[in-house]
Image (cartoon, rainbow, N blue to C red):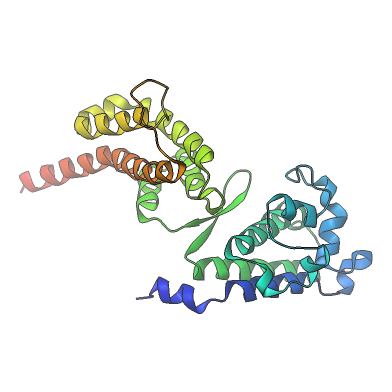
Amino acid sequence: MIDITRLEQRLNLQEETCKIIRYMGEYDRCFGDNNTLWGTINNSFKHWEKRGLALNSYEYLKYQNVSILSNREIFFPEENTLNDKDCYFVLLFICNYICDMIITESDEEISIRVKTIFQNITSIMEKSNYQLKFLEDRIIACKRDANVDSVIQLTGDKSLTELLLSYLDMTIHDDVNEKAHILMQLFKYVEKDKVIYINADNKLKSSVFALYNKLEIRHNDKKQIELLDKDKLKWYDILFQLTLHLVRVPYIKEMQNEVKELTNNK
């Protein structure tokens, strides 16, 4: 069995990220006048729908608070200039941009280079205990979560899958507002089937719904708990896991009934 902790310790995230950045900055005749993959990215950057106000890749990363000090350092980075969060943001930017703007390139040499980058980034994420997930509008990286995986498998619901994976997105790990927004959408999902949850486990349903109220997710009232952001994050994560359990309960009940029926027929 693979020890994920040891796997993460063996990976030098900064070294591997910088290796990819430098690889993208290498001259190759397949890129024509752009010379490098970074040149190709910057040449088409203004057409990228997700660029916001950024006019090139350097500005985009700067707006994401990635600690690259100059435009030159995108192409020739020093490992000590990037922290872990910077590395993940850079890798996700590369994945999303390549998928949106370059993945359709017909040139075989460009395709090989892009495929190599994707393979390396996927491997880096896996060794960091992250998974790359393809949502409708973006690629995200999220920590493995067996509870989320089980709910996705049980429900097969695409909209629920998007919500659950979005909550695990590493880029919103400390984002109170974004997590609250996703939890609100998750509450709407379970509220529409509240009768099912009442019948399956009314006590759990009541506890979960009450917590949505107390944590300022469902609506505002005087009985809500005043918490610091760090405490909100803790309770949001607890509420997220409780909601997963609530969604799973009807399926478990159904399986238990099937087992009971099978054993009674013997």
